[in-house]
Structures are given as structure tokens and as C-alpha cells.
Image (cartoon, rainbow, N blue to C red; front, side, top):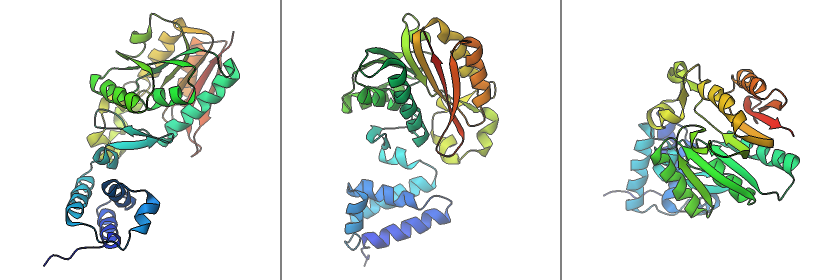
Length: 287
């Protein structure tokens, strides 16, 4: 006769199994919360309840998928970003906490450069899930937001997120600045592919096997798209204006140099993330 496990027993067993197989044990809790549609505190309160057989089977299946390398967020279909829930699938990168720091720094600089309520034209280049564009629209409703991506599938995911989160955004398909080239912009953000192909073998198999390579890797040691953005953006920016870019932690100096050359009178800064690694380049263009 099959023994029914309590939630505590199922969680403990799954966490140990994940750790033995080189995954983080905490993933079990996230997956179980998703199956039970409950919060962390809700899960704690149910620890001695029996886990129904159907949910036990689903939990076992999810744990096996994660052991094989499928990221937790692609299993649950969601990820949190800046306090909101975004739909994610294998067409888009999973939003990272470091990118929230790009949003925070941008909001601070917008207030400094433009004041609080000025109507501004804002573009997010390479929007992926739409996390940056949607968050900026929700946090700064005065922005007129356009989001672009090279991938039709990514744009479809971003549009789904914009609808669910009730953010009014214009989506455009195309490469880098091409979809926004016929207008002038106050603020442009981008979190482009920036990993060098040579770094692939050092990366987690969870990322390499499942997240879209088009959104991860770039030529010229990961710097190609920054160079192109630095070349193309001077013709598209108003004055004053703000450009913000997420970067790889070794790329601060190189990316800053591209923008210093393209915008010789701008204030270009490299900002570190919470882990004290170079993570963002801001280019503040004055009058």
C-alpha cells in the first residue's frame, strides 16, 4: 500500500534529492509553493498536512525536470521582478535581480535630469519578457514607452505580460535601434546579450541548455552590441537625455569608453551591483 507523505516529508526528501544531484535544495520549496498555490508562510502552516497523491506526482515530475536542467522559472512559468509576477518561457531570458538595480538607478536619474512629471519618450531595446519596459511604465506612468526585440516569440511573451500587468506599451519587432530610428528619445535602456561565446563552458548547464542563446551571447568578447548602440544612439537622443545599459562585470571600462567617444560631453559612469561587481553603465547627456 502506497504511503502518503506529509508536505514536510515530501519537501525534505525533494530538497535532499536535488542537492545530491547538484541542484539547489531551495528549488523544491518554490516548486511546491507553486503546485499548492500558496505563499512561504502558507506552506509553513501546512507542513503536517498530507500531500494529495496527484500533487505528489506533479511535484515528483517537476523535481525530475529540474534535475535534468530545466530552470525552476520555466517549470512554474513565472518569475518575480520588482514586486510583480512576469510570465516567462524559453523564448525569453529569466529576469535577474541585478536588472532591478538598473531600474532603480534609472528612476533616480530621470528625477534628477527631468523632474517628476514630465512626459518623456522611453525605449527599451531587446525587451525579452518586457520586465524593464513594463516596470518603468508602472513606476513612472508619465513615460511614453516603446519596447523592441529581434524575436517575435519574445515580443509575444512581453505583450502577454503588458496585458496582464495593465501597462500601455508599444511593441516593435527589429534589431537594436532599427525599430526606433525615425524618432528622438529622452531615455533609452538596454540589457543586450553580453556574454562572450568563450565563456559558455564555464556557465551553468541550466542556463546554457534552456535560456535563448540569442539573448545571452554576443561577438567581440560580448561587446558587439554595446559598440553598435554607442555608434547608433547619438543621432536618436534628445538633450538632455539618459542611456542606461546592463553589462557583464568585466565590461565596465570598455563599454564606458564606447559611450565617452560617442558622447564626449556626457557624464558616463560605471555603477556596481549589490555584489560590488560592475553591472551598469549610465550615460547622462546634458543640454
